Image 1 (cartoon, rainbow, N blue to C red):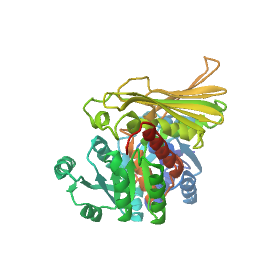
Image 2 (tube, rainbow, N blue to C red):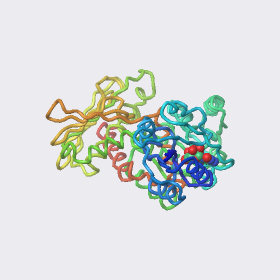
Image 3 (cartoon, rainbow, N blue to C red):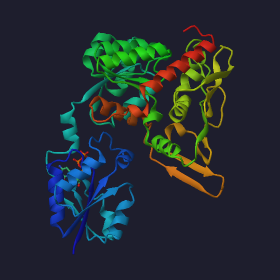
Image 4 (tube, rainbow, N blue to C red):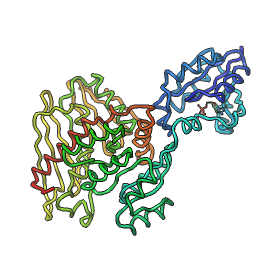
Length: 446
Ligand code: CTP
């Protein structure tokens, strides 16, 4: 009996997939099809897959050719599968020519001609037209956003708005996009808006973008007052628009793995969370000089509060802030203590004091530790009383990681997936509330 194996995502099952499976089956007597998991697709940079794994498997099965369907979870799996299932032929579409020649050491490798003019990517784009994205603000985060947005299919970078037109033009020239100084004109040219302007301008821009019927992805901290967050989410809902707060940690696959393990009971009941993020900033930068909106907490607080809300929830009993200030009266190091009915948490951040910067989750049976940069989670460990027992987990984190949040934002707009559970509106509102309490405690007049 000749055994054949093939692999694919098989998203939005189409004729190209059908013909590939048909010919693969024709190569032998028994066909095994490996369907990729969502996590694996994300890890290899294939974002925006529409159908769930269950649907994709069901569609492959319905095609009628496979004798067996397996799941593909890791890059090194193919060699193992070929050995394990005693495979004679590995078949794949001609878009992969040469790529799998290394498997020739184990079996015959056949590249089948790809069916022309059809692909999942094409169907995804037909189902949901390309979203033209416009950026407000031209700061450092904006520089990181554009290369990441380019990697997400279904979105195209249209232009940038900055009231200081020289900055907009300089930025636009560099990235070969359009520069706008007129906000109305900008809104006419784009479908969705990414806000990366100074914190205090977020509220106004979000409101005006929503008024113009645009979906919004806004950098953290989205707003600095609870009522503003509540108002904006309500307004977005009324207008049937998506409003996302861009905390990249929330959307990265590694952090999800970590949350899943933390909440699975492996380390028992969680009693303490310590999250720390420090980044030494130049003295002359806005973060160190803007006496109303600058400082460590407005800059980095969202990152360190976020895991605490994820693990302990929104209903803390008390919150307390301790800061070390610079000569401008700005916090260069801040420690926030939160008390919950069954646990305690500290969120530490600094722009002028360097610390270890780790995430530690302590439970009644063990603890999880993720070293800096845990906010771009790619590795963490689970430790127990028995020091010899350490579980190690890793997950791919590609580039700057903004691609994950952009991809989730886009899928939500297109109605393909809801990522609300990753960072809920309620959590964003509580974060704004904590920001507000902090600014009040610091007696800043915002
Ligand atoms: N395939 C094919 N002809 C097509 C599209 C896909 O023969 N027109 C083959 C691929 O070469 C692969 C299998 O079908 O062997 C599964 O491919 P997959 O990546 O799931 O499909 P694509 O349509 O190429 O998906 P995407 O656009 O997301 O890359």
